[in-house]
Amino acid sequence: MKFLGKTKGTAAFENHRQTWITEADIKEIAATNVLNTVRVPVGHWIIRDATTSPGTEADVFAPGGLKYLDTLINSWAVKYNIAVIISLHAHQGSQNGYEHSAPATIGKVGWSTLQTNIDNSLKFATFLAARYRNSPAFLGLALMNEPTPPVDRTILQNFYIEAYKQIRATGNMCILFVTPFLSEQDADHLRGMIGAPQYVNVWNEIHAYFIWGYAGKTEQQILAEIDNYDQTHLKAAPTNNRLFLGEWCMGGPPDQTGIFQNLDNFRELGRKQLAYYNADITGGWAFWTWRHSDESIKRTGWSMRYLIRSGYLKLS
Image 1 (cartoon, rainbow, N blue to C red):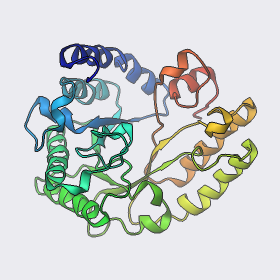
Image 2: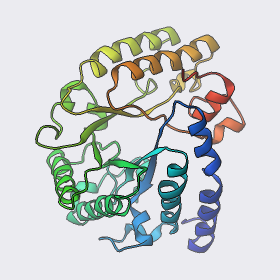
Image 3: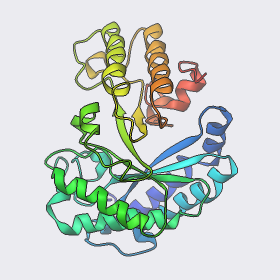
Image 4: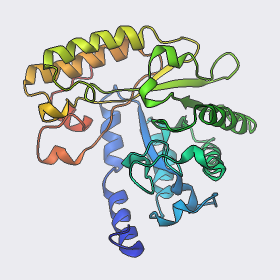
């Protein structure tokens, strides 16, 4: 938006939203006869299409995204019997400093430093929960994607509790997904999350990537790490809340050019993960992502539709 300006930037985003994910994609997802849910990342500015929100960071973003989310949840997903999870991916102030949380300055984490940001996040969550409450396709909200320090741990926990209270106060019983810090997505830290029996219909969300932290390991060593992950993270997870694996992929460490070179190992990377996730995750999983720009130019582990179409990933 800064490069193109608001007018040209908004037009570019409008074209992207019209063409990147269409009804044909939802139809293809449903046609697998295995996939039944999509997880959709959204930024805090999306609600500005229909309401106000505290703070000013939303002013710089392209408007117009909400109508596409409406169409997905109220039309396409209903038509093809697909459930929708909305992931609150980008919070005002940024909860992790990464590009996908849309920080004002890349690398700067400021979400918990201002009450305005927290108030914005509560409006973000409660508005979307209310908007889609009566849609048969709406499954729930992932309240925050991949928070990291220096986000304040107590403020994060209190945000989960307050969002829960405000949404439940309206009688809305949609699933609310909560997650620990990105660096603490293990069984021990999951035991510290809000959950049953005090908090109803709250699920824990974690993400699994065998990419970062695996530099220098061979493909066979990484495949063996998946066995260990299943024992220490999945089988050992607390059972008071259902466990949802919100993201996984078939990418590899950067020192392996980002993808397994041996095709048998590449297929095994998908097969082994899928077998464990289907067996040991009580709340299902979502792949990151359905479509990736790399799929038109090279083999990629980030596009599920490419992996399915190419036969690298067998869902059943």
